[in-house]
Image (cartoon, rainbow, N blue to C red; front, side, top):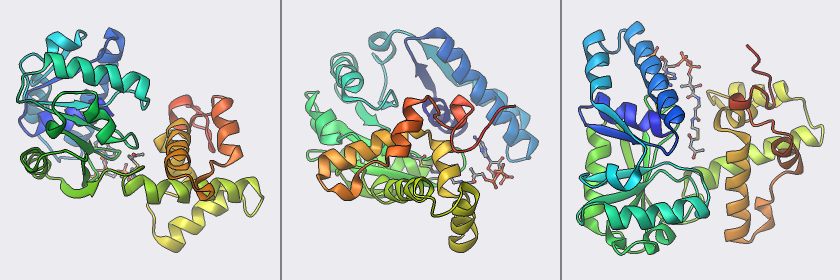
Length: 272
Ligand code: CAA
């Protein structure tokens, strides 16, 4: 998701550095941005000049500490585990300027916990974007226990400047978005596992009956089944209520490597 966030920032005039330890991932991210910008040119949403200027505002770097030494804001979008995010927040705290804001695009990890890995809890906040980022209007702006009003205001204003609608949410497992969305997706997988209906029928009920743009199983494939499982595990563990128990079929599909669109196979097949 990091490339999509960089896309939106750069398109709105901000200079952005995409950071990843892996050079190939940076090349892939930049190529994705170029292709999504081209899609916007083809749809006449932006001009060819805007596409070129946007790409010129995006730089890449593989060394985290060096790359953040002169920034005003970091938006972290690494893997959704505390083992990966914790040390990154420690490094950001050491390497970024004292007044920089450290935001996370996490979909379920506690902002308060991330803040506690730093010595600047007042400047740590959640900035949760939604896929596809260039299209979706929402940014959940998540306040950790000690997030300052100044940090909240800065991130809220940035979201508005990006043409998004920021919504204030307090730190809680899954925030609002995934607290509501993921149990619906999980329940759809239970319906499939129990033979209540087949996958097309389940998705059709929700697209035609509830006017959702995608059925829950299509949406799960779009988000990534591993991401859905990870969020259900956080809800189950942190809230301690069995109503959040991940569906065994979801676990089985992730164990098989059927992760949705990104792996070519999820509830649906994406070969070719
Ligand atoms: N970059 C730029 N533009 C894009 C894009 C991308 N990656 N993907 C789609 N678009 C644009 C298209 O160009 C098109 O633009 P115009 O309106 O200007 O023509 C528009 O989006 C609609 O796209 P399509 O016509 O191709 O397809 P669609 O009408 O079926 O819409 C969709 C596609 C926007 C993805 C729609 O199906 C949808 O809204 N799905 C639900 C998405 C959703 O729920 N996202 C949240 C997931 S949860 C999450 O992200 C967070 C988490 O924590 C798990």
